[in-house]
Image 1 (tube, rainbow, N blue to C red):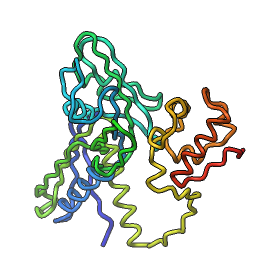
Image 2: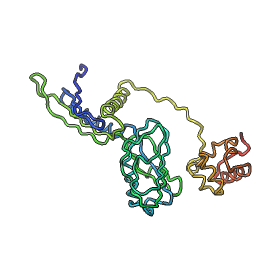
Image 3: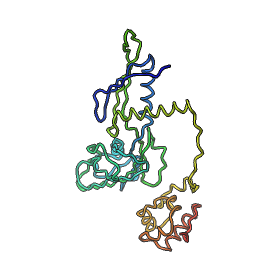
Image 4: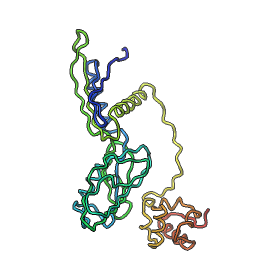
Length: 306
């Protein structure tokens, strides 16, 4: 079989929408390409989304915040609509801190310099006079869709969210017959692609095609999986996800650790004495208290270590 030759024309090109006309294709290949590209675009392209949040004064999702017109469920639904442009892989922290009456918008979310909120005018909540809204957000990169139930609840008051990472909102493939000379049994594939503006339609079409090509190459010329060199496993399991507030440390000590970025048992197990002694409000006595608290959880911590 000779290599296929067809044209790709782009119509109505915008930042978040484009119509691609692909033809002429051999009979049956319009649906084959359209279906496979649609599936990959919706499920396998990377993006970023809010995966959890913590609101000062709120213990769970099914509650309210005095002075905020929306209940917490409605507020979290609005947060799911916030779209981020982010090419990194590590989770990042975002914050909302508003103390004035009126609308709280997506542009009020403070994020690192390498991340951008692409729909800043999205309204998240409406506050009455004298109301304060303080929110801590966890923003992660991923692919496809991730339900909230797949994430462990690390601490009291943490609200996990369903996350849709894909930058593609909708894909509509349609196939029609087209003529090549006297022959009329060729396919014309029209592919409409809508994105959330974090990626251009032409780019996501190319990315999806590259993913499919990579899979087909593995069928044609299979490569054996290389044994991965794993990093040292601390073997902490679920205990490693516990927050420092949950292991019985004095409030002064746990607050100092959190402010210094040591938020979980896993963080503490990797910490060095030289770093901890520099933390404000911690001293040699505090290190012994930390060691004892970790010991009760079966985690070894050498307060005399370097």
